[in-house]
Image (cartoon, rainbow, N blue to C red; front, side, top):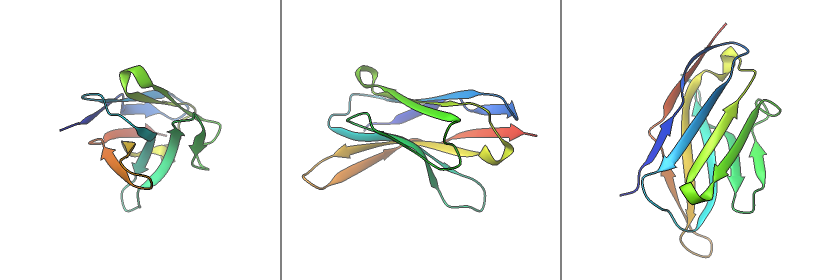
Length: 120
């Protein structure tokens, strides 16, 4: 069974940077999109950033201009560079790989989550 393994989370001061990585344990074919989501205590999971197979990107409004998503297809890895971090960025960050399994059908793989804590 394929697993997504995240790394790079931790504790950082406001204004600092972190880089998250997420790699699949084995090759996943027909990936439609890779993305990062986050969930803070008491809040719903929200989209942070997503990159599609044609390299188009989409960001949550609160992170635009501060976060950058990128990927390495050969390594089945997605990255999230987070700059100018704010305390409100504190959350568990989850990576997601969306695999196309049919004309309009997808299967979602999820990482186990990595904690990002930004101190003020």
